[in-house]
Length: 252
Image 1 (cartoon, one colour):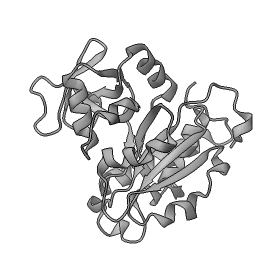
Image 2 (cartoon, one colour):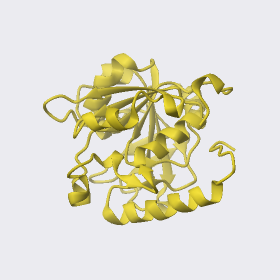
Image 3 (spheres, rainbow, N blue to C red):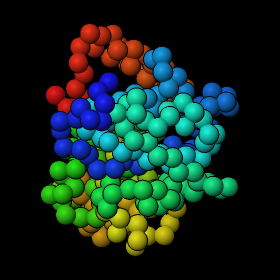
Image 4 (cartoon, rainbow, N blue to C red):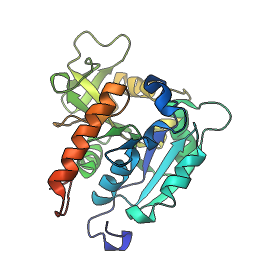
């Protein structure tokens, strides 16, 4: 792994990873470890995420944590072995929700920042998201994928370069895209929103024409359920076998 000083690409803006959930759908697998720290292909799942972000040009990651929070710093340290600076922000006594988790991290984030989830490994180039966000000139950008390529029901509508409707329950009748799980925001978006659910912020921005669409073409890998965990194990082991002895570049 190259160190932060070896990076030659333009650094990405700061990244907030939401990693505070209980992971109840995994049953007893999360009794002793938070979901992002479950071992997949020989290492904690979130290490695959962090290594990919480092290779893509990230330098600063802020983890929003809650359940078994102390384990994150114990396992990941300060991030230097990934070529990153890691900060950890705890929810507190009560779960903050996804938007609340991001809001707690705002003092450590850049004015424009990326949001991801600690249980999903995304096959998309973050710098392309940054470019779409800057070109869109809106307070938010959501990465989406055509529902035919994913595993979930469609929940958003893309019109031109914008998300024109987004809702998980119930989804818009004409929806044909799904939320991919990587977003970018300006801090002002959170100054205007006081809810606890990030999906509500995304819906509000979509309704007001202020959410840019960035379309991904490759399905993501996630570990939210036991079946997904098995699939992630198989896929990442294949990835590791195919890249042994090679220099991996997720943006090539």
